[in-house]
Length: 391
Length: 111
Image (cartoon, rainbow over all chains, first blue to last red):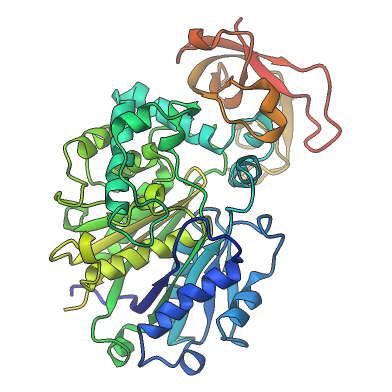
């Protein structure tokens, strides 16, 4: 490896994503934690884990703030220090980065990072209301723009600037459902067709229902260690070689280019530099397809193709499971689901599975370097992490 | 209306108390023309609760003559007539809400 890694992942856990009726977020998180602990018998969670960083987007779903000690209690890790991070949909991407910083500081050798969200018990209107809080209250929420509306404004700008088509956007959803059908934990495990997407009901033109990810319940977590002690706990660690975070305005309206997400470009540049690699070295990626257009724009902002060519990239199959650069083998946010706070570390979970050869029917053979792209709001927060398989 | 920073001349819409460019708090009010061109738009079919009765409606981002950009609902234009690049002007609702922000709600219409 050319650069010293920042941290190592020695284990990971993911709950089922979907409508988990009757379960609270704390219980769902405990499920994810249990998997991570069981997969790592050499780890003694109570003795070894020194801190917890957990992301959750909103207190409003369960009327519950102060989740740090709550999660500690439910995963049996009291009284270690814990912090809840909130960056809308990038909450656990930021939890991951914060855990990495904690390890790099030398303060802790082993930490747990993760995220959770419980959303399915509310109506669509109720969830829409809370999700809209990821946008600017006086200037976006107040005008009735709605969160899908924000991405629709970006989609229309991208279509106008680059002639991207609704069919190309639909291909993202079709691809991710195809992958999700191979993922037993995905919210949706059913394939769909372009016709299904094109005929789904309009949400915010040009985005239709099937251009939008579902509201899901779920949780995810990772166990991070200092790189040089990882092999005490697992024979197959995954090293984190790049970790970056950048921001843009909370609201969309003041930006110069609605067809690109500046914060993503900045975070990606920093992450590639830290890892000492270029976009062409990435073998697979989990990107933030909250809406189909977001994945197309992500290809461009992450340097997988030139600006404006994102639509073509998915159309010719480059980012399919059997393509040159598989994207969202988990099913992405669209099919795997998007329990908002859980998504960032869920992406890392998928990369962890892929780089340890544990992804079953959706395994990308020989994958060595993975990338996770987690975005909050209209990429007012962006985190990019790069993962490398152990030698 | 917007404000212009006395120190670095930046125009800020919405008005602020601290200039994010130079951190000065000295501002002059300026009258904007309210005229602009549509940069992008969408048609909302699944609105938040308070806007249910109005759906479907168009919202967009307009670049005003002075260079600042603003979002808002596009009214009194047929949805099918809305095009990127079209000319729009700002207008205001008559009532001012009691809750924050206590600005009269503005929207865009054809000139």
